[in-house]
Each structure stands twice: as C-alpha cells, then as structure tokens.
Length: 194
Image (cartoon, rainbow, N blue to C red; front, side, top):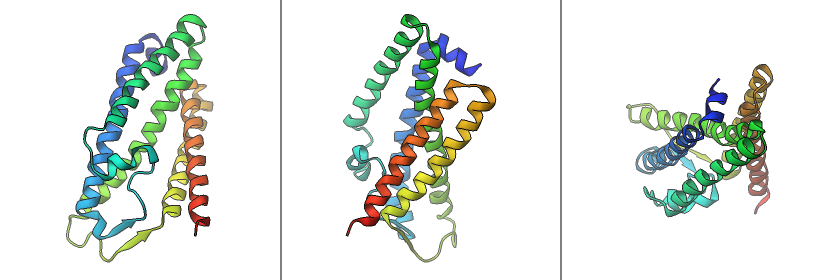
C-alpha cells in the first residue's frame, strides 16, 4: 500500500526521501559531535567517524550546513522525479520507480538504525560507570562490521520482498547488498595496507 501511494504521489515520495536523507546528515553531525566531545574518551575509531569518503571532511569539522550535502540532496530530488516521470509516465513501468525509491529509502532506514545505536551508546555513556577503560577500532574492523550489518539488512529486505512481492524491498535489498559489499572490499584494502 505504501508503495502504491508513493507511485501515485511523487511529491510525497520526494518529501519522504528528503526528510530521511536530511535526518541522516543531521544525525551524523550530532553523533559525531557526541563522539568528539565525550565518547572518544572511551571508544576510538581509526580514521574518520564518517564512513562515506565524500562527506568525511564535513563530518570531521562538524559542518552543520554542508554545500556538498545540499548539492547532492537537491540533485537527488531532481533524479527521483526524473526516474518517476520516465518509469511511471513514459514507460508505464511503476516497478522501476519502486525499485529505485526502495534502494534509496530502505538503505537510509538501515543507516538510521546505526544512528540510533550510536546515539544510544553516546547518551548512555554519560551515566557514571556506563563505560570504563578504552577500546580502539581499526578502520578495517569498522568497515567489516558495517558490511555485516548492511548485508544483514539486505537479507531481511530480500525476505520481505519475497513475502510481499515488493519491488520497493527488492530495491532496499540490492542497495544494502551493494553498499555492504563496498564496505567489505574497503575493509580488505585497509587490512592489507601497511
């Protein structure tokens, strides 16, 4: 039903996408701030807090308004509308739009779960005795854990796709699978680097 509503109302789909993508960036900046001000006393991440190389400079400097992000955010609205127009209006193949929207939206759902976990960890460490000592994560391990998490979401979304016969969930499965494999390969490069 959600899928059909989005197909028939592209502006709602664009608004939903815009909100979840913007909240991803805002949560990234907020959790990076919490990491830099408190959590880094207990947990050390090798490299940048941000996994996406394109945004690492902005996140490292806690840039609330990122020209890079804004440009990509606006471009994504245009591309989403074009995909809808081509798939639904010209080709009469709304499943293409569902697949594309699912690949964007459901990957963000998986990323938001990570944000919730990071936010919870950061906020709970303010409680006395929440964390003791210090742990350091190597870059390859961070990327491997991210890959495992995204591949798990890919499996969940694929099973949901089969159960519901949903192109939206197939898009989410493919997107999480692709990003998970990217992180897996990036982790191997860091593991073999001197």
